[in-house]
Structure formats: C-alpha cells, structure tokens
Length: 337
Ligand code: DAH
Image 1 (cartoon, protein in one colour):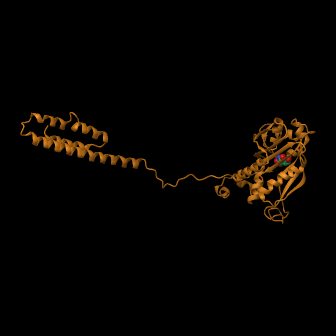
Image 2 (spheres, rainbow, N blue to C red):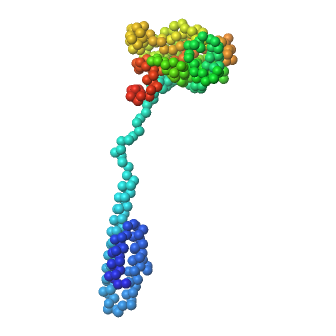
Image 3 (cartoon, rainbow, N blue to C red):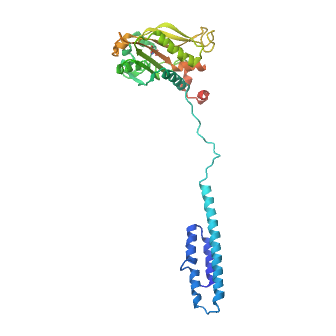
C-alpha cells in the first residue's frame, strides 16, 4: 500500500469511528507493531538509498498527523460521552412534585396530649381489642345481662357474646385480671355505638384511666383531672363533680369543666351554664375489683373515661362530630401544626 492509499483509508476510518474502543482499534490498525504505517516504515530498507530520506520524511509526517488526529478525536469522543451522560442522567431539580406533607388528625393530637400528660404522672399507656367479649365490655364491669345500663349504649353485636366495644372501660377488667395493684394505666382507643347525629358518631374515641392502689381517694381523681384540664384548656379551668351513676364506679361522678369559650360567664357553647360536661368518672366499684380477683378490703381506686372527640370539639369549636370522620382535607388541614 502506498502512503497516499493509507492516508485515504485512515481519513475514512477515523471519520466513521464513533467510540473510544473503536478509536483504539484504529490506532492498532495503523500505528501498532504490525500496523499499516509501521509496516510501510519497515519497508524503507528495500528502497534505493537515495529515496529513503524523502520516503522516511513523508511516512513520519503522516504518522505525526495521525497522532494529532487520534488526540483530537479522543478529546472529541470524550466530550460527546460526557454530554450524553449529562443529558441521560440529568435530575430535573425544578420539578415541584414533592409529596404533600401530612399532619396528625385533631383527635390523635388530643390523644397524644392526654397520654403525654398522664405518662408524666407515671401512667402506663395500654391498648386493647376493638372486638370485645360481652364479659369484658359489660359483665365484669358489674353490668349483668338485663341491666338497664345496657340501654344507655346501643351496642353492635357480632354474636350473642362478641361485640364491638362500646367503651374503653372494657380494658379495666382485662388489665385487673392479669396484673395486680398498684396499677396506673391509661387506654386510648376507638369505641362503637349505633348512634349518629351532630354529637354522636357510630365510631368515636375514648381514653380510659385507671388507678388501683391503697388509700386512693376522690381527691386523687380530682387532682389528676384538674391537671389534665389545665393543660388542655388553660390554667384558669375549674373542675366540678356532679353525682351520677355508672355500674362500675361507686360513687360515680359526671365531670364538668368551666367553659373554655366564655370562661364560665355563660355562652351558646355552654348553653348559658358556664360549665361543659366532659367526662364520667368515679371510685372503682368493689364488685369490679372482686370480679377481677383483687381484694377490695385492701385496695381501692379511681377510674375515668374521656370522650376525646368531644374534647377536640370543645377545644376547637367544632359543631359536628361527623367532620372528624369525613376526611375532608380542607377541614383537617386547619389542625396541621
Ligand atoms: N365508660 C363510660 C361511658 O362510655 C365512661 C366512664 C364513666 C368511664 C365512668 C369510667 C368511669 O372509667 O369511671 O359512658
């Protein structure tokens, strides 16, 4: 092959070369140990001596040219490769499709607040089953079969003896059966009743408190409730006990707080009374202690059950309990912290 032929081939090859490995192959083809140009250079010895300098100079010139072209082509291919990767691996940081931030449901916030307050007093938080037996929900709590108190709670029965729990009080019996005093527990959770209007929902949330120890008094109960009320509704909040009846407490009380809307003067929220009824409580009925194997001559205790939805409604001025369960984001967003 002549110099001109090699040069022509090389120009065509290098123009077609599209990748760095191909370029390396070309280098071997032309400049390698048995490459075309190397072979040509070796053939110099077969030429008459007078032609050798000119021939040698031409071959060298072509080789230098090739070297320059290889360097230039390598640079160009590396640039192309970089541009391709930048394009392919590009992250579009201008996209604004970040997921929307969630927030805790207002009732969950109330639950967390009450639990935190009680944990600080040494209570332990426990949870129990929503599908409950008639025994724990009623009988163990001194509510036998035909007891009129059952009418107060419209129960969803699954079978004759299995139901959706109507009250977190069911946890009282479960815990007292397993553990012995001193007991200081709090049980938040869902409860169910067949009832639906602006202030009743078939599912709602209660939190049950139970303390069993020696020499517990109604004052201990009141102190605990005053502490919770002050933190939930403000330091100035007062707590009032009114006599009431629950089969599982004796005596039983209905607990009112001074209205957080008017401070006790009387407004539409408290229907002019200055007080809002918030929860039921009392001293644990000795029958319940005995049902659970606790000696009522040695131990006594108090219990309370707070409707957490109701607390949230009072605290935030929400007129209809059903708003909590509709999952309308416009409503829920207002409570995002
Ligand atoms: N379980 C009752 C209810 O759902 C509320 C309640 C009243 C709970 C008195 C208690 C209590 O622990 O002592 O209406």
